[in-house]
Length: 406
Image (cartoon, rainbow, N blue to C red):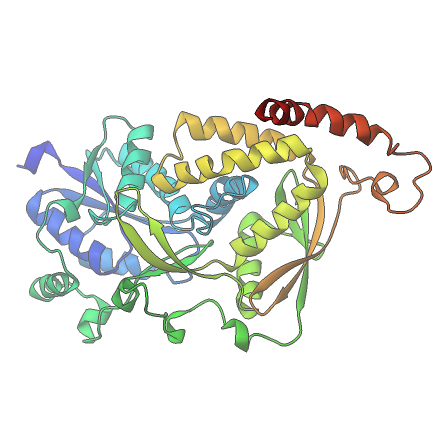
């Protein structure tokens, strides 16, 4: 008889150490059937080996899906319309992937008649919150099994011992290698935590970085890239139309070659602790800089300022796992409304870790009027005498206050 009435569980499965062990643990502890779900969201490694590992573990229902376009189109691009940055630095690479995975977990649970879903996020991190808030928002009565909150395998060494005892093939354990950094990768970024990074004073080792060259080792000549925008989204690069995923793959490559997108952050996790992580986000770094440049030309001042005021709240929602919340959806509707005018092109220069805006234009929606802004004779387009009244009205409260203070 299955434990707690659970007969079938859908597991977010990578085929790595943690989730390989979770398959066996669920089978033993819950006496249930396990369905594995592996998503290709651009992590840059083959996902098909997960099929063989799942089959070796006795799994009959195996889902392996290419979600790169959906991830870029429906999650990353909408977030970048908001210019979202958490705590001034983090471009939310891990955070934005979790809502999509949660969505597919509950959809597969419905398709297969599963009683529960499961994930490999630890009880210390944000991902457990993101997965489960997303799942509950989409399937309120879903049951969630989080092994890290139940078992006593609370170290990498214990996990590898468990793998050895149960004949679970895990590459680096079998080869006797030291446990690597805890890493997460997708189209938007790759992250590194743990090991020497647990000391915030310790500089990351150069051989840790996988996607980018060191800025000092980047080419001595800059690389120019022209990005075409439609409704706030990049639709072409250097005149070539591209899908959202193709845009990100291209920018990751060219950005990485120029040392773009490295960051070393101590962030505040939603669960209360501070955590140090290192990130490579080449495409995202370029996209953020270029999108703000496009908006600077096309967005009304007050609309742009309102977006900037709301952005930290939006970023916090994404970071904390509230992608499927009514407040995030309401903010998204407001943000998307502002993007109808964000059309045109931005030229950026990539040079030794820097993204430098080299030009921007919008034949259809530019609010930049050279006849008004010019330092030369504007032929009466702007009457400078009008500024006197404007200044006096805005100074009125300041003058009244100064008089009262004596």
